[in-house]
Image (cartoon, rainbow, N blue to C red; front, top):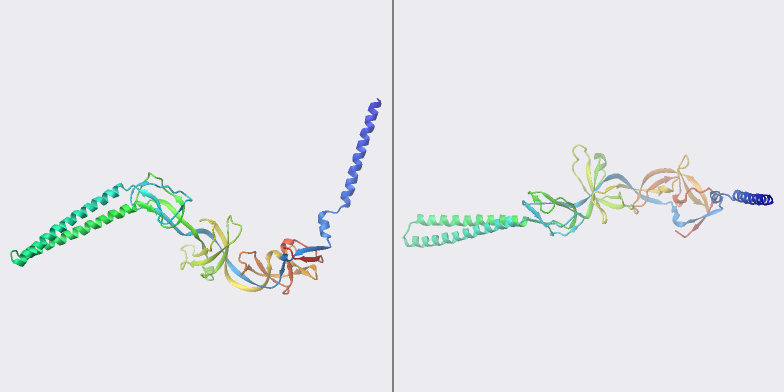
Length: 377
């Protein structure tokens, strides 16, 4: 019985100690202000100079939205020129090929024999020319001596001319057979990459059957349809900034060509924007962007610096080493001519030149908060 009472007293003591510890932790937590509250009650903030935009005139480029798919400027489908069995097709999708490289062959046996036959016929025709030439020379000598009539000489001349014509026809036939033999070898028309393999070795191929598709990825362009009204403001040489799927950074493009005719049905005009020195891209990727059609000089700041959490847009500026809020009116938007791939800028009305506007990445700051500008980035 004594043991049970002792155990009970020990348990009560443990519970009392634990309760006291929990009560003290609660008082400590209640006395410590939240982190956000501490931050809001800060007396000053340090801001890097790179987080400040000084108000000054900026040349903003206005643009026309475009979208479309990328395609290679140089592409080709390798087709069979002569019928026969396909041999020696080794390349596959993704393989690089050089201009003039042998890609495949058509079984040349039949064409080799046709060429040999045509060459033999040409040789036989040459022999007939020699025979006709000797007969003509003999008849001419006999006519000069008066032994035969002029009619016999004319007949031998006609025979010689006929043999010469037959020889030329045989030579042409040999050339045709030789060309067919050459066409049995399929070669790459340019340096590029195989994008599709459409046949397999051993297949019987008809004339104009598709074997391979090749693309040259060194030069890509965007085919962008424009409305008839929008196409009026587009000119060859204008630049554009494009965003391509799967690629975080933008790329520059230039209007290379504009189709002089509108498309039947849609009435759209096709503009072709050539990408400038971009590697690692593929044909068929979707791209969208803006063609720069006009440039204006205005007072502007990055669009991200404008805050819209109030009824009217405003910006945060540094005034007398303190944060101040300035209500502004927004104007046209665009990209800086000197930074075409940077973020969007917007015209602001209501700020003087030289005003120090804070970057939007700093978040909302309390008006009157002291600011210390550092040299860090």
